Image (cartoon, rainbow, N blue to C red; front, side, top):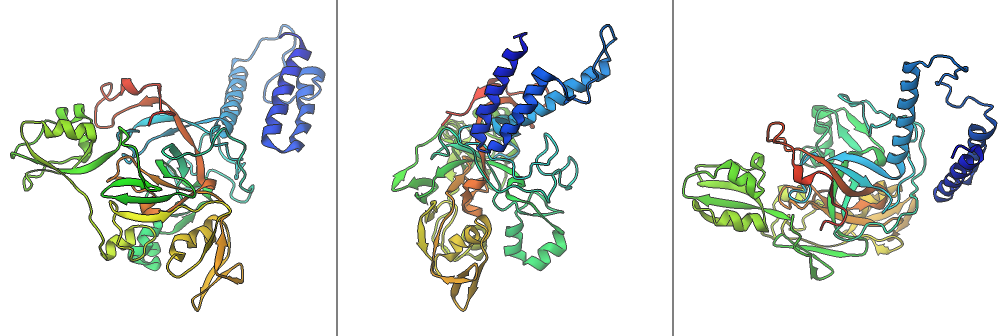
Length: 446
């Protein structure tokens, strides 16, 4: 390895393989840089690093600077093409993925996206810490393109993706869904009260993690809280949980007992009017354990029955029309597939309007009951991308595709592969560290 030609050959081969994968052969010009770094050494490429003369004392500050810059470049390269670290911010995936889990997300399986905003601050996603100021250059954009992956998104996979409704953000309520506020309160009132509105490109919206319950071409239905896809009931995965009303003899359950069972005590509260817990989120295993507690009288699932025409429910659930669906009795709904063609009607346009207009970047209008795409009247549409339907494993505490619709393939980031750290915010340090979840592989956990 001390031979400069051997080192050059190794790096040149790796670089050529990367260029082939990238699919842009203009990058082969970079071989000249690699040749100069190892062979001719005419250009001082790492200009920040001082070149010492023989016997000259080294500057520790300059050596540290060189190490830091190398680390930033190397980790940024890994983040873009291979792995990236994320933190689970909410309980929508409990008890499969827990609030406070730190994940490494694998981008190789689905294929990494070529950065659509290449000029961006390292280790930041969309804003500078503590502000809403963009941490990327907005005027420099590259068209969406995804590199070749191993397999792609499959049914029942855990998936990290960009929030589809995150393209518009209220500055006073940045974590809320802008479109939900508009449906309930009107655009003018919403923007006047909670605005101004920030607009973000699809690759810079906030990250979500859910389970993909249906892929492109599937037909999905939720019956009494249970997911059915193409006429078959979804497997009962260990981490899936629902909300239950737990009636007790008038006494509360010891919080430590609930925590040992796996209940998130921060989201379960005792009410003397029940008496008991009006909403306790339990897995099948947790349900069995809570039902056996001595002071528990009954446990009843909090299922929303249908059909109903409640206006509030209609405005909350996709496609935001009078379907009569509820969160627990939802569908049937077909998941759009690339190259599939649908006939557009007044009854189904609500399902596809945002796809046509926003996700696939067309000029869509409705005039006198007729549909116009890019100025041309039409009664059909052929999809450009595949779409997915995502749901949280915490089925009664998850804002998912039931509330904002389909996830385009352009928004897919990757799959959680390893939990490298996990901490419970409801407990003090060091008892908050979940030692049993450290370095836990989640890629095949289903």
